[in-house]
Amino acid sequence: MCGILAVLGCSDDSQAKRVRVLELSRRLKHRGPDWSGLYQHGDFYLAHQRLAIIDPASGDQPLFNEDKRIVVTVNGEIYNHEQLRKSLPNHKFRTGSDCDVIAHLYEEHGENFVDMLDGMFSFVLLDTRDNSFIVARDAIGITSLYIGWGLDGSVWISSELKGLHDDCEHFEVFPPGHLYSSKNGGLRRWYNPPWFSEAIPSTPYEPLVLRRAFENAVIKRLMTDVPFGVLLSGGLDSSLVAAITARYLAGTKAAKQWGAQLHSFCVGLEGSPDLKAAKEVSDYLGTVHHEFHFTVQDGIDAIEDVIHHIETYDVTTIRASTPMFLMSRKIKSLGVKMVISGEGSDEIFGGYLYFHKAPNKEEFHRETCRKIKALHQYDCLRANKATSAWGVEARVPFLDKEFINVAMSIDPESKMIKPGEGRIEKWILRRAFDDEEHPYLPKHILYRQKEQFSDGVGYSWIDGLKAHAELHVTDKMMLNAEHIFPHNTPTTKEAYYYRTIFERSFPQNSASLTVPGGASVACSTAKAIEWDASWSKNLDPSGRAAVGVHNSAYEELLPPVANGNLAPTMIDDVPRMVGIPAKELTIQS
Image (tube, rainbow, N blue to C red; front, side, top):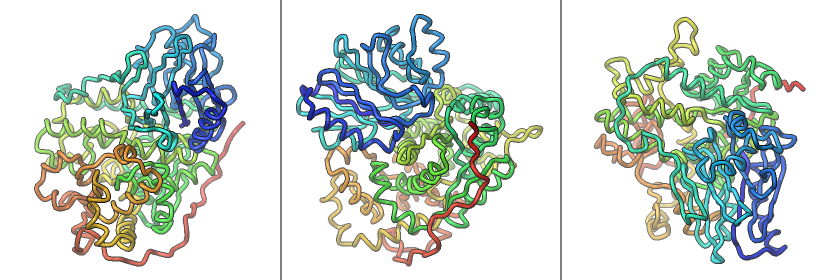
Protein backbone atom coordinates (compact mmCIF):
# COMPACT_ATOMS: atom_id res chain seq x y z
CA MET A 1 0.00 0.00 0.00
CA CYS A 2 1.09 3.53 -0.74
CA GLY A 3 -0.11 6.83 0.68
CA ILE A 4 -1.64 9.52 -1.53
CA LEU A 5 -2.53 13.11 -0.75
CA ALA A 6 -3.98 15.64 -3.18
CA VAL A 7 -4.87 19.30 -2.62
CA LEU A 8 -6.86 20.53 -5.60
CA GLY A 9 -7.67 24.14 -6.41
CA CYS A 10 -6.60 25.73 -3.13
CA SER A 11 -5.95 29.22 -4.60
CA ASP A 12 -2.44 29.16 -3.12
CA ASP A 13 0.63 28.25 -5.15
CA SER A 14 3.15 29.63 -2.64
CA GLN A 15 6.23 27.90 -1.29
CA ALA A 16 4.62 27.91 2.14
CA LYS A 17 1.67 25.90 0.80
CA ARG A 18 4.02 23.42 -0.87
CA VAL A 19 5.86 22.98 2.43
CA ARG A 20 2.54 22.38 4.20
CA VAL A 21 1.49 19.73 1.67
CA LEU A 22 4.86 18.00 2.11
CA GLU A 23 4.41 18.10 5.87
CA LEU A 24 0.96 16.51 5.64
CA SER A 25 2.16 13.93 3.14
CA ARG A 26 4.86 12.83 5.58
CA ARG A 27 2.08 11.80 7.97
CA LEU A 28 1.44 8.97 5.47
CA LYS A 29 5.08 7.87 5.16
CA HIS A 30 4.44 4.66 7.12
CA ARG A 31 2.29 3.52 4.19
CA GLY A 32 5.05 4.15 1.66
CA PRO A 33 8.56 4.23 3.16
CA ASP A 34 10.37 3.56 -0.14
CA TRP A 35 10.09 6.95 -1.90
CA SER A 36 8.29 10.29 -1.79
CA GLY A 37 7.03 12.38 -4.69
CA LEU A 38 5.22 15.70 -5.07
CA TYR A 39 3.87 17.27 -8.27
CA GLN A 40 2.65 20.87 -8.31
CA HIS A 41 0.71 22.53 -11.11
CA GLY A 42 -0.32 25.99 -9.98
CA ASP A 43 -2.58 25.49 -6.96
CA PHE A 44 -2.95 21.74 -7.58
CA TYR A 45 -0.72 19.41 -5.53
CA LEU A 46 -0.39 15.63 -5.92
CA ALA A 47 1.78 13.91 -3.29
CA HIS A 48 2.75 10.26 -3.00
CA GLN A 49 4.47 8.02 -0.46
CA ARG A 50 5.52 4.84 -2.22
CA LEU A 51 5.61 1.23 -1.13
CA ALA A 52 7.41 -0.39 -4.07
CA ILE A 53 5.90 -3.79 -4.95
CA ILE A 54 5.93 -3.80 -8.78
CA ASP A 55 8.93 -2.33 -10.65
CA PRO A 56 10.70 -1.00 -7.53
CA ALA A 57 13.47 0.57 -9.65
CA SER A 58 11.49 2.90 -11.92
CA GLY A 59 7.87 3.04 -10.78
CA ASP A 60 8.10 6.16 -8.60
CA GLN A 61 5.10 8.47 -8.57
CA PRO A 62 3.32 10.63 -9.55
CA LEU A 63 2.99 8.98 -12.97
CA PHE A 64 2.45 10.70 -16.33
CA ASN A 65 1.29 10.14 -19.87
CA GLU A 66 3.71 10.71 -22.77
CA ASP A 67 3.57 14.52 -22.81
CA LYS A 68 3.23 14.82 -19.02
CA ARG A 69 -0.03 16.72 -19.26
CA ILE A 70 -1.96 14.00 -17.43
CA VAL A 71 -0.70 13.26 -13.92
CA VAL A 72 -1.74 10.45 -11.57
CA THR A 73 -1.03 9.55 -7.96
CA VAL A 74 -2.16 6.02 -7.12
CA ASN A 75 -2.39 3.67 -4.17
CA GLY A 76 -3.04 0.10 -5.26
CA GLU A 77 -2.34 -2.81 -7.55
CA ILE A 78 -3.76 -3.33 -11.05
CA TYR A 79 -3.62 -7.08 -11.63
CA ASN A 80 -4.59 -6.94 -15.32
CA HIS A 81 -2.11 -4.20 -16.24
CA GLU A 82 -0.30 -6.38 -18.78
CA GLN A 83 -3.52 -7.04 -20.72
CA LEU A 84 -4.41 -3.35 -20.53
CA ARG A 85 -1.00 -2.37 -21.91
CA LYS A 86 -1.61 -4.63 -24.89
CA SER A 87 -4.91 -2.83 -25.52
CA LEU A 88 -2.98 0.46 -25.81
CA PRO A 89 -0.53 -0.26 -28.68
CA ASN A 90 -0.10 3.41 -29.62
CA HIS A 91 1.03 4.48 -26.16
CA LYS A 92 4.53 4.58 -24.72
CA PHE A 93 4.91 3.71 -21.04
CA ARG A 94 7.57 5.36 -18.91
CA THR A 95 7.77 2.62 -16.24
CA GLY A 96 6.94 -1.01 -15.60
CA SER A 97 4.56 -0.04 -12.80
CA ASP A 98 1.16 -1.69 -12.94
CA CYS A 99 -0.42 1.72 -12.26
CA ASP A 100 1.19 3.30 -15.33
CA VAL A 101 -1.81 2.28 -17.44
CA ILE A 102 -4.22 4.67 -15.71
CA ALA A 103 -3.15 7.93 -17.41
CA HIS A 104 -3.15 6.24 -20.83
CA LEU A 105 -6.57 4.66 -20.31
CA TYR A 106 -7.91 8.11 -19.48
CA GLU A 107 -6.48 9.45 -22.76
CA GLU A 108 -8.31 6.73 -24.69
CA HIS A 109 -11.58 6.43 -22.79
CA GLY A 110 -12.04 9.60 -20.75
CA GLU A 111 -13.64 9.08 -17.34
CA ASN A 112 -15.30 5.79 -18.31
CA PHE A 113 -12.29 3.50 -17.93
CA VAL A 114 -12.40 2.73 -14.20
CA ASP A 115 -14.42 -0.48 -14.54
CA MET A 116 -11.67 -1.82 -16.82
CA LEU A 117 -9.28 -1.94 -13.86
CA ASP A 118 -9.01 -5.30 -12.10
CA GLY A 119 -7.47 -4.68 -8.73
CA MET A 120 -7.53 -2.58 -5.59
CA PHE A 121 -6.88 1.12 -5.98
CA SER A 122 -7.45 4.71 -5.00
CA PHE A 123 -6.20 7.39 -7.34
CA VAL A 124 -6.32 11.07 -8.23
CA LEU A 125 -5.87 12.03 -11.90
CA LEU A 126 -5.21 15.65 -12.93
CA ASP A 127 -5.65 16.76 -16.52
CA THR A 128 -3.49 19.90 -16.73
CA ARG A 129 -4.95 20.82 -20.13
CA ASP A 130 -8.07 22.17 -18.42
CA ASN A 131 -7.26 21.62 -14.71
CA SER A 132 -10.02 19.05 -14.40
CA PHE A 133 -9.55 16.04 -12.16
CA ILE A 134 -11.12 12.72 -11.24
CA VAL A 135 -10.84 10.61 -8.10
CA ALA A 136 -11.78 6.94 -7.87
CA ARG A 137 -11.81 4.15 -5.29
CA ASP A 138 -11.94 0.41 -5.91
CA ALA A 139 -15.19 -1.54 -5.97
CA ILE A 140 -15.31 -2.76 -2.36
CA GLY A 141 -13.04 -0.22 -0.67
CA ILE A 142 -10.01 -2.43 -0.03
CA THR A 143 -7.84 0.68 -0.15
CA SER A 144 -8.72 3.45 2.28
CA LEU A 145 -9.64 6.93 1.02
CA TYR A 146 -11.11 10.17 2.38
CA ILE A 147 -12.35 13.38 0.78
CA GLY A 148 -12.41 16.83 2.38
CA TRP A 149 -13.29 20.43 1.53
CA GLY A 150 -11.49 23.60 2.52
CA LEU A 151 -12.95 27.04 3.15
CA ASP A 152 -10.92 28.30 0.17
CA GLY A 153 -12.92 26.08 -2.21
CA SER A 154 -10.29 23.36 -2.36
CA VAL A 155 -10.94 19.62 -2.57
CA TRP A 156 -8.65 17.34 -0.53
CA ILE A 157 -8.04 13.63 -1.02
CA SER A 158 -6.05 11.45 1.37
CA SER A 159 -5.44 7.77 2.03
CA GLU A 160 -5.90 8.41 5.73
CA LEU A 161 -7.68 10.93 7.94
CA LYS A 162 -4.42 12.20 9.37
CA GLY A 163 -3.47 13.65 5.98
CA LEU A 164 -6.36 16.12 5.86
CA HIS A 165 -8.30 16.38 9.13
CA ASP A 166 -6.41 19.44 10.40
CA ASP A 167 -6.83 21.49 7.20
CA CYS A 168 -10.40 20.77 6.04
CA GLU A 169 -13.63 22.36 7.17
CA HIS A 170 -15.45 19.09 6.53
CA PHE A 171 -14.31 15.62 5.47
CA GLU A 172 -15.79 12.17 5.07
CA VAL A 173 -15.14 8.67 3.77
CA PHE A 174 -14.80 8.52 -0.01
CA PRO A 175 -17.36 5.83 -0.90
CA PRO A 176 -16.06 2.62 -2.53
CA GLY A 177 -17.00 1.93 -6.13
CA HIS A 178 -17.41 5.65 -6.79
CA LEU A 179 -15.80 8.28 -8.99
CA TYR A 180 -15.61 12.02 -8.28
CA SER A 181 -15.46 14.26 -11.35
CA SER A 182 -14.65 17.96 -11.13
CA LYS A 183 -16.32 18.42 -14.52
CA ASN A 184 -19.59 16.95 -13.30
CA GLY A 185 -19.23 18.38 -9.82
CA GLY A 186 -19.95 15.31 -7.76
CA LEU A 187 -19.81 11.59 -7.06
CA ARG A 188 -21.24 8.78 -9.14
CA ARG A 189 -21.09 5.04 -8.66
CA TRP A 190 -19.02 3.31 -11.35
CA TYR A 191 -19.38 -0.17 -9.78
CA ASN A 192 -22.83 -1.60 -10.56
CA PRO A 193 -22.79 -5.41 -10.20
CA PRO A 194 -26.01 -7.45 -10.32
CA TRP A 195 -25.92 -8.26 -6.58
CA PHE A 196 -25.89 -4.59 -5.57
CA SER A 197 -29.66 -4.31 -5.95
CA GLU A 198 -30.06 -7.19 -3.43
CA ALA A 199 -32.35 -9.07 -5.83
CA ILE A 200 -32.40 -12.77 -4.99
CA PRO A 201 -30.20 -14.75 -7.45
CA SER A 202 -31.08 -18.19 -8.80
CA THR A 203 -27.93 -19.66 -10.40
CA PRO A 204 -27.48 -23.31 -9.29
CA TYR A 205 -24.45 -24.04 -7.13
CA GLU A 206 -21.59 -25.64 -9.09
CA PRO A 207 -18.67 -26.55 -6.79
CA LEU A 208 -16.03 -26.62 -9.51
CA VAL A 209 -17.09 -23.25 -10.92
CA LEU A 210 -16.73 -21.68 -7.49
CA ARG A 211 -13.40 -23.44 -6.91
CA ARG A 212 -11.90 -22.29 -10.18
CA ALA A 213 -13.08 -18.71 -9.67
CA PHE A 214 -11.33 -18.51 -6.33
CA GLU A 215 -8.17 -20.17 -7.59
CA ASN A 216 -8.00 -17.55 -10.35
CA ALA A 217 -8.46 -14.79 -7.77
CA VAL A 218 -5.52 -16.07 -5.71
CA ILE A 219 -3.25 -16.75 -8.68
CA LYS A 220 -3.54 -13.22 -10.11
CA ARG A 221 -2.43 -11.86 -6.72
CA LEU A 222 0.92 -13.65 -6.96
CA MET A 223 2.07 -10.70 -9.10
CA THR A 224 5.00 -9.23 -7.15
CA ASP A 225 8.62 -8.11 -7.47
CA VAL A 226 9.28 -8.32 -3.72
CA PRO A 227 9.26 -11.08 -1.04
CA PHE A 228 5.75 -12.07 0.11
CA GLY A 229 3.85 -14.57 2.22
CA VAL A 230 0.38 -15.50 3.45
CA LEU A 231 -1.42 -14.70 6.69
CA LEU A 232 -2.45 -18.05 8.15
CA SER A 233 -4.80 -18.23 11.13
CA GLY A 234 -5.69 -21.88 10.60
CA GLY A 235 -9.30 -21.02 9.83
CA LEU A 236 -10.98 -21.99 6.58
CA ASP A 237 -10.42 -18.77 4.64
CA SER A 238 -6.73 -18.14 5.30
CA SER A 239 -6.00 -21.87 4.99
CA LEU A 240 -7.58 -22.02 1.53
CA VAL A 241 -5.59 -18.95 0.47
CA ALA A 242 -2.41 -20.64 1.69
CA ALA A 243 -3.27 -23.98 0.07
CA ILE A 244 -3.94 -22.46 -3.35
CA THR A 245 -0.86 -20.24 -3.16
CA ALA A 246 1.34 -23.20 -2.21
CA ARG A 247 -0.16 -25.30 -5.01
CA TYR A 248 0.35 -22.74 -7.80
CA LEU A 249 3.41 -20.77 -6.67
CA ALA A 250 5.95 -22.91 -8.51
CA GLY A 251 6.53 -21.68 -12.03
CA THR A 252 5.42 -18.10 -11.33
CA LYS A 253 7.67 -15.09 -11.74
CA ALA A 254 7.56 -14.61 -7.97
CA ALA A 255 8.88 -18.14 -7.40
CA LYS A 256 11.75 -17.59 -9.83
CA GLN A 257 12.72 -14.41 -7.98
CA TRP A 258 12.20 -15.42 -4.35
CA GLY A 259 11.99 -19.21 -4.28
CA ALA A 260 9.08 -21.63 -4.49
CA GLN A 261 8.67 -22.28 -0.76
CA LEU A 262 5.84 -20.25 0.70
CA HIS A 263 6.19 -18.31 3.96
CA SER A 264 3.21 -18.16 6.34
CA PHE A 265 2.58 -15.95 9.36
CA CYS A 266 0.35 -16.31 12.42
CA VAL A 267 -0.17 -14.38 15.65
CA GLY A 268 -1.86 -15.26 18.91
CA LEU A 269 -1.75 -15.52 22.66
CA GLU A 270 0.09 -18.54 24.02
CA GLY A 271 -2.13 -21.60 23.51
CA SER A 272 -4.69 -19.81 21.32
CA PRO A 273 -6.91 -21.74 18.87
CA ASP A 274 -5.36 -20.05 15.82
CA LEU A 275 -1.74 -20.91 16.67
CA LYS A 276 -2.46 -24.62 16.95
CA ALA A 277 -4.55 -24.79 13.78
CA ALA A 278 -2.13 -22.63 11.75
CA LYS A 279 0.84 -24.83 12.68
CA GLU A 280 -1.06 -27.90 11.57
CA VAL A 281 -1.98 -26.32 8.21
CA SER A 282 1.59 -25.12 7.73
CA ASP A 283 2.96 -28.62 8.36
CA TYR A 284 0.44 -30.06 5.91
CA LEU A 285 1.28 -27.53 3.17
CA GLY A 286 5.01 -27.42 3.84
CA THR A 287 5.24 -23.66 4.35
CA VAL A 288 8.04 -21.91 6.21
CA HIS A 289 5.95 -20.90 9.21
CA HIS A 290 6.53 -17.86 11.42
CA GLU A 291 4.54 -17.90 14.65
CA PHE A 292 4.36 -14.77 16.78
CA HIS A 293 3.10 -14.62 20.37
CA PHE A 294 1.82 -11.56 22.17
CA THR A 295 0.45 -11.06 25.66
CA VAL A 296 -2.71 -9.24 26.67
CA GLN A 297 -0.50 -6.49 28.09
CA ASP A 298 1.39 -6.20 24.78
CA GLY A 299 -1.90 -5.60 23.05
CA ILE A 300 -3.16 -3.10 25.61
CA ASP A 301 0.09 -1.15 25.39
CA ALA A 302 -0.38 -0.88 21.62
CA ILE A 303 -4.02 0.30 21.68
CA GLU A 304 -3.25 4.02 21.34
CA ASP A 305 -0.96 3.41 18.35
CA VAL A 306 -3.55 1.09 16.82
CA ILE A 307 -6.36 3.63 17.06
CA HIS A 308 -4.09 6.35 15.65
CA HIS A 309 -3.29 4.18 12.64
CA ILE A 310 -6.64 2.43 12.09
CA GLU A 311 -8.59 5.67 12.62
CA THR A 312 -11.69 4.15 14.17
CA TYR A 313 -13.34 3.65 17.55
CA ASP A 314 -15.36 0.62 16.43
CA VAL A 315 -14.91 -2.06 19.09
CA THR A 316 -14.61 -5.19 16.97
CA THR A 317 -12.25 -3.48 14.50
CA ILE A 318 -9.89 -2.42 17.29
CA ARG A 319 -10.01 -5.86 18.91
CA ALA A 320 -8.98 -7.52 15.65
CA SER A 321 -6.61 -4.80 14.43
CA THR A 322 -4.30 -4.96 17.44
CA PRO A 323 -2.91 -8.49 16.87
CA MET A 324 -2.68 -7.79 13.13
CA PHE A 325 -0.82 -4.54 13.83
CA LEU A 326 1.69 -6.36 16.05
CA MET A 327 2.13 -9.19 13.54
CA SER A 328 2.67 -6.78 10.63
CA ARG A 329 5.61 -5.21 12.43
CA LYS A 330 7.23 -8.62 12.82
CA ILE A 331 6.52 -9.48 9.18
CA LYS A 332 8.19 -6.28 7.97
CA SER A 333 11.23 -7.04 10.13
CA LEU A 334 11.71 -10.23 8.10
CA GLY A 335 11.95 -8.25 4.85
CA VAL A 336 8.47 -9.16 3.61
CA LYS A 337 6.45 -6.36 1.97
CA MET A 338 3.30 -8.12 0.74
CA VAL A 339 0.92 -10.68 2.25
CA ILE A 340 -2.20 -12.42 0.96
CA SER A 341 -5.09 -12.61 3.43
CA GLY A 342 -8.57 -14.11 3.77
CA GLU A 343 -10.86 -11.14 4.44
CA GLY A 344 -14.28 -11.03 2.78
CA SER A 345 -15.32 -14.68 2.77
CA ASP A 346 -17.64 -14.41 5.76
CA GLU A 347 -19.53 -11.54 4.20
CA ILE A 348 -19.96 -13.29 0.85
CA PHE A 349 -20.93 -16.72 2.19
CA GLY A 350 -22.64 -15.82 5.45
CA GLY A 351 -19.82 -17.23 7.54
CA TYR A 352 -20.47 -15.37 10.77
CA LEU A 353 -22.15 -17.55 13.34
CA TYR A 354 -25.25 -15.38 13.59
CA PHE A 355 -26.16 -16.51 10.06
CA HIS A 356 -27.29 -19.78 11.69
CA LYS A 357 -30.43 -17.88 12.66
CA ALA A 358 -31.24 -16.46 9.22
CA PRO A 359 -35.00 -17.07 8.83
CA ASN A 360 -34.97 -17.68 5.06
CA LYS A 361 -32.78 -17.46 1.98
CA GLU A 362 -34.03 -13.98 1.10
CA GLU A 363 -32.95 -12.50 4.43
CA PHE A 364 -29.70 -14.48 4.26
CA HIS A 365 -28.84 -12.98 0.86
CA ARG A 366 -29.81 -9.42 1.76
CA GLU A 367 -27.62 -9.61 4.87
CA THR A 368 -24.62 -10.77 2.82
CA CYS A 369 -25.18 -7.80 0.48
CA ARG A 370 -25.34 -5.40 3.43
CA LYS A 371 -22.16 -6.90 4.87
CA ILE A 372 -20.19 -6.61 1.62
CA LYS A 373 -21.28 -3.00 1.17
CA ALA A 374 -20.01 -2.19 4.68
CA LEU A 375 -16.66 -3.99 4.42
CA HIS A 376 -14.75 -0.78 3.77
CA GLN A 377 -15.70 0.40 7.27
CA TYR A 378 -14.62 -2.78 9.05
CA ASP A 379 -12.43 -5.65 7.79
CA CYS A 380 -11.02 -3.81 4.77
CA LEU A 381 -10.17 -0.85 6.99
CA ARG A 382 -8.43 -3.17 9.44
CA ALA A 383 -6.51 -5.20 6.88
CA ASN A 384 -5.40 -2.13 4.95
CA LYS A 385 -4.34 0.11 7.81
CA ALA A 386 -2.98 -2.47 10.28
CA THR A 387 -0.52 -3.71 7.66
CA SER A 388 0.16 -0.31 6.07
CA ALA A 389 1.17 1.01 9.49
CA TRP A 390 4.42 -0.92 8.97
CA GLY A 391 4.79 -0.63 5.19
CA VAL A 392 3.24 -4.00 4.35
CA GLU A 393 0.61 -4.55 1.65
CA ALA A 394 -2.35 -6.91 2.20
CA ARG A 395 -4.12 -8.49 -0.80
CA VAL A 396 -7.55 -10.05 -0.42
CA PRO A 397 -8.56 -12.54 -3.16
CA PHE A 398 -12.05 -13.16 -1.75
CA LEU A 399 -12.86 -9.57 -2.76
CA ASP A 400 -11.88 -10.10 -6.39
CA LYS A 401 -14.59 -8.55 -8.58
CA GLU A 402 -15.04 -11.64 -10.76
CA PHE A 403 -15.11 -13.99 -7.79
CA ILE A 404 -17.74 -11.89 -6.02
CA ASN A 405 -19.88 -11.95 -9.16
CA VAL A 406 -19.70 -15.76 -9.26
CA ALA A 407 -20.32 -16.27 -5.54
CA MET A 408 -23.12 -13.73 -5.26
CA SER A 409 -25.01 -15.12 -8.26
CA ILE A 410 -25.52 -18.50 -6.51
CA ASP A 411 -29.00 -19.27 -5.22
CA PRO A 412 -28.69 -18.40 -1.50
CA GLU A 413 -30.62 -21.54 -0.60
CA SER A 414 -27.28 -23.32 -1.12
CA LYS A 415 -25.60 -21.00 1.41
CA MET A 416 -28.18 -21.55 4.14
CA ILE A 417 -26.81 -23.20 7.29
CA LYS A 418 -28.61 -26.48 8.05
CA PRO A 419 -26.83 -28.47 10.79
CA GLY A 420 -29.37 -31.29 10.51
CA GLU A 421 -28.19 -31.86 6.94
CA GLY A 422 -24.50 -31.50 7.82
CA ARG A 423 -24.32 -27.99 6.35
CA ILE A 424 -22.34 -25.66 8.60
CA GLU A 425 -21.45 -22.03 7.83
CA LYS A 426 -19.73 -21.51 4.43
CA TRP A 427 -20.69 -25.05 3.45
CA ILE A 428 -20.59 -24.34 -0.29
CA LEU A 429 -17.02 -23.03 -0.06
CA ARG A 430 -15.90 -26.00 2.02
CA ARG A 431 -17.50 -28.46 -0.37
CA ALA A 432 -15.93 -26.75 -3.39
CA PHE A 433 -12.47 -27.56 -2.02
CA ASP A 434 -13.29 -30.97 -0.58
CA ASP A 435 -11.21 -32.93 -3.09
CA GLU A 436 -10.66 -36.54 -2.07
CA GLU A 437 -8.14 -37.25 -4.83
CA HIS A 438 -6.00 -34.11 -4.46
CA PRO A 439 -6.94 -32.66 -1.05
CA TYR A 440 -6.28 -29.00 -0.40
CA LEU A 441 -6.53 -29.26 3.40
CA PRO A 442 -7.08 -31.82 6.17
CA LYS A 443 -10.79 -32.52 6.63
CA HIS A 444 -11.03 -31.16 10.16
CA ILE A 445 -9.45 -27.88 9.07
CA LEU A 446 -11.70 -27.66 6.03
CA TYR A 447 -14.68 -28.04 8.38
CA ARG A 448 -13.37 -26.05 11.38
CA GLN A 449 -15.97 -23.78 13.03
CA LYS A 450 -15.73 -20.08 12.28
CA GLU A 451 -13.54 -18.06 14.67
CA GLN A 452 -13.48 -14.29 14.35
CA PHE A 453 -9.87 -13.10 14.25
CA SER A 454 -10.19 -11.24 17.57
CA ASP A 455 -11.45 -14.48 19.18
CA GLY A 456 -9.11 -16.91 17.43
CA VAL A 457 -5.94 -15.18 18.65
CA GLY A 458 -7.01 -16.19 22.17
CA TYR A 459 -10.29 -15.76 24.08
CA SER A 460 -8.53 -14.01 26.99
CA TRP A 461 -7.61 -11.16 24.61
CA ILE A 462 -11.15 -9.76 24.53
CA ASP A 463 -11.73 -10.59 28.17
CA GLY A 464 -8.53 -8.73 29.06
CA LEU A 465 -9.56 -5.68 27.05
CA LYS A 466 -12.87 -5.53 28.89
CA ALA A 467 -11.13 -5.84 32.24
CA HIS A 468 -8.67 -3.07 31.33
CA ALA A 469 -11.50 -0.74 30.29
CA GLU A 470 -13.31 -1.49 33.56
CA LEU A 471 -10.28 -0.18 35.44
CA HIS A 472 -10.13 3.06 33.46
CA VAL A 473 -13.78 4.00 32.85
CA THR A 474 -16.05 4.61 35.84
CA ASP A 475 -19.78 4.19 36.14
CA LYS A 476 -20.03 7.96 36.60
CA MET A 477 -18.29 8.52 33.25
CA MET A 478 -20.75 6.18 31.55
CA LEU A 479 -23.70 8.18 32.92
CA ASN A 480 -22.55 11.23 30.95
CA ALA A 481 -21.61 9.36 27.78
CA GLU A 482 -24.63 10.47 25.74
CA HIS A 483 -23.83 14.13 26.43
CA ILE A 484 -20.11 13.90 25.71
CA PHE A 485 -20.52 11.65 22.67
CA PRO A 486 -24.00 12.33 21.24
CA HIS A 487 -23.10 10.59 17.95
CA ASN A 488 -22.55 6.82 18.26
CA THR A 489 -22.76 7.05 22.05
CA PRO A 490 -20.62 4.28 23.59
CA THR A 491 -22.75 1.80 25.53
CA THR A 492 -19.93 -0.20 27.17
CA LYS A 493 -16.83 0.81 29.06
CA GLU A 494 -14.64 -0.76 26.41
CA ALA A 495 -16.28 1.36 23.70
CA TYR A 496 -15.98 4.50 25.88
CA TYR A 497 -12.26 3.83 26.43
CA TYR A 498 -11.58 3.54 22.69
CA ARG A 499 -13.67 6.62 21.92
CA THR A 500 -11.67 8.85 24.26
CA ILE A 501 -8.41 7.74 22.63
CA PHE A 502 -9.83 8.36 19.15
CA GLU A 503 -11.04 11.84 20.07
CA ARG A 504 -7.57 12.84 21.23
CA SER A 505 -6.13 12.14 17.77
CA PHE A 506 -9.16 13.20 15.74
CA PRO A 507 -11.23 15.76 17.68
CA GLN A 508 -13.25 17.10 14.76
CA ASN A 509 -16.94 16.24 14.48
CA SER A 510 -16.33 15.11 10.88
CA ALA A 511 -13.91 12.47 12.19
CA SER A 512 -16.46 10.86 14.51
CA LEU A 513 -18.93 10.71 11.62
CA THR A 514 -16.54 8.54 9.54
CA VAL A 515 -16.99 5.63 11.97
CA PRO A 516 -20.07 3.39 11.67
CA GLY A 517 -22.33 2.69 14.61
CA GLY A 518 -25.41 0.72 15.55
CA ALA A 519 -26.14 -2.43 17.51
CA SER A 520 -24.39 -5.68 16.58
CA VAL A 521 -24.14 -9.24 17.79
CA ALA A 522 -21.28 -11.43 16.55
CA CYS A 523 -20.55 -8.84 13.80
CA SER A 524 -24.12 -8.67 12.50
CA THR A 525 -25.76 -5.61 11.03
CA ALA A 526 -28.44 -3.96 13.16
CA LYS A 527 -31.11 -5.43 10.88
CA ALA A 528 -30.04 -9.04 11.56
CA ILE A 529 -30.51 -8.64 15.32
CA GLU A 530 -34.21 -9.04 14.57
CA TRP A 531 -33.54 -12.71 13.72
CA ASP A 532 -33.32 -13.72 17.41
CA ALA A 533 -35.11 -11.92 20.25
CA SER A 534 -32.45 -12.92 22.80
CA TRP A 535 -29.66 -11.16 20.90
CA SER A 536 -30.88 -7.67 21.81
CA LYS A 537 -29.89 -8.51 25.42
CA ASN A 538 -26.40 -9.73 24.46
CA LEU A 539 -25.02 -7.09 22.10
CA ASP A 540 -21.33 -7.81 21.59
CA PRO A 541 -19.45 -8.12 18.28
CA SER A 542 -17.51 -11.20 19.40
CA GLY A 543 -18.46 -14.50 17.77
CA ARG A 544 -18.97 -15.90 21.26
CA ALA A 545 -21.99 -13.62 21.59
CA ALA A 546 -23.80 -16.01 19.24
CA VAL A 547 -25.12 -17.90 22.24
CA GLY A 548 -26.37 -21.34 21.32
CA VAL A 549 -24.20 -21.43 18.19
CA HIS A 550 -20.53 -20.93 19.13
CA ASN A 551 -18.88 -23.94 20.74
CA SER A 552 -17.35 -21.64 23.39
CA ALA A 553 -20.20 -19.17 23.80
CA TYR A 554 -20.04 -16.52 26.53
CA GLU A 555 -22.67 -18.26 28.62
CA GLU A 556 -20.31 -21.21 29.04
CA LEU A 557 -17.17 -19.15 29.72
CA LEU A 558 -18.00 -16.16 31.88
CA PRO A 559 -19.85 -15.57 35.13
CA PRO A 560 -22.68 -13.05 34.98
CA VAL A 561 -21.53 -9.48 35.67
CA ALA A 562 -23.29 -6.16 35.93
CA ASN A 563 -23.57 -3.89 32.91
CA GLY A 564 -21.96 -6.43 30.59
CA ASN A 565 -18.47 -5.59 31.90
CA LEU A 566 -15.98 -7.95 33.49
CA ALA A 567 -14.78 -7.40 37.02
CA PRO A 568 -11.21 -6.05 37.16
CA THR A 569 -8.55 -8.74 36.95
CA MET A 570 -4.76 -8.71 36.98
CA ILE A 571 -3.25 -8.68 33.50
CA ASP A 572 -0.82 -11.52 32.90
CA ASP A 573 2.90 -10.93 33.18
CA VAL A 574 4.12 -13.68 30.87
CA PRO A 575 7.05 -12.90 28.52
CA ARG A 576 6.57 -10.10 26.01
CA MET A 577 5.90 -10.57 22.29
CA VAL A 578 8.26 -13.18 20.91
CA GLY A 579 8.76 -14.94 17.61
CA ILE A 580 8.95 -18.70 17.38
CA PRO A 581 12.09 -19.59 15.40
CA ALA A 582 11.40 -20.62 11.84
CA LYS A 583 13.57 -21.41 8.90
CA GLU A 584 15.32 -18.25 7.75
CA LEU A 585 13.65 -16.20 5.05
CA THR A 586 15.59 -16.92 1.89
CA ILE A 587 15.84 -14.10 -0.61
CA GLN A 588 17.46 -15.07 -3.86
CA SER A 589 19.06 -12.50 -6.13
